[in-house]
Image 1 (tube, rainbow, N blue to C red):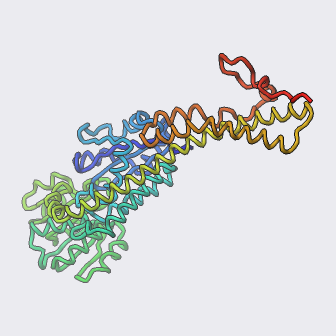
Image 2: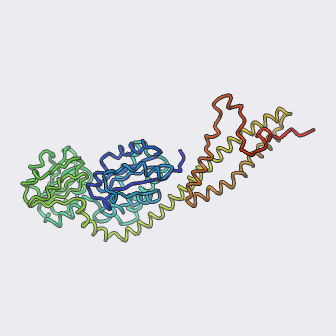
Image 3: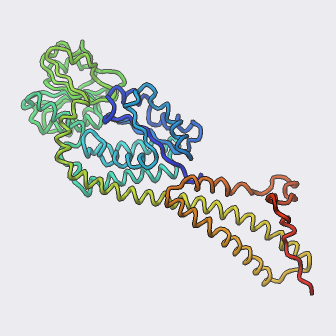
Length: 447
């Protein structure tokens, strides 16, 4: 496969969409989305990423219109204003911004770069990663790593888990309180660690797999206990704060379960939601979701704006490097195809000429070398101008010229004949030509 494809992307993220809209766009797994996209016409590569605040998909096709068509059904039930369409350069730059944490609710959060890596591996396992996305996503991950090692973009509140605890601390005095964390994934772990720093007296972690909950509480220095998720109603009765972040497709808390809890702050950072929104109408229950974290993260954003500008400069530099690399590869693909086609024709016609000359009296080694040098020189001189034009076309983003060249100089167009009849057939002579290729073979000089 040539490396001349363009990237087309679509994003449903917190900057334009609600939690419900992100949920609607991310119903399938990342690997499932990639497999589905690869089955679509003209799609050569595909990549998808789903997190709690974004659902995005990218494809590589030879033409942007094909990419848009392939992605048209990615979020069919989501309103148009919540869907952001991205074409090649915008898509590449967006991926870099995502990995660097500039597109996250919590500016500079650390978790997103791991999520990009995981999504990359899922896409690779589904057969979605080829040369174009390999370069683009790898570069995005590299930018994310540089952002976190060379700037202070991730200092302070760096995750939804810690942001959830910051929000809760504004609503309830956590000193001496009891906190319940539901779930045992990355966000739940970060929330439990953040709670440990607030002065809570007890932390309970509830999870379907209790052994995983035990792993979290074993690392905490405050009084902590692992509980089965089946015992939630009993555990809720003693909690002052609940932070929930499971991977359940259905709510794990509803109005009935929370109706007898009394004063309770509940922060739901799961996608899909862990808490039925109607529970927020109960007396004494304060319910916050991911959208409510904006107020907490805005303060972090203010502190990190100078660092973000540094990361933006970094992205500009890395983006320019990647685009130059793409341009060189695209030009090289077309030039290689052109030379491969020309070399095949040259070799065939040279063999024909040598055979005729041998039949007319033979060739010395020096004469054979002269004839071969002549053929090489003709190819080189004839292709020098188009080679220069193709490099200039790549430098000017003239991909139409590049694609036209690839179609005109398809290395397969002059493949070896498949039948004996084809082998004896003379090459097609362009209209208007006065002589065939056989007539063009030089006659043996008179002696």
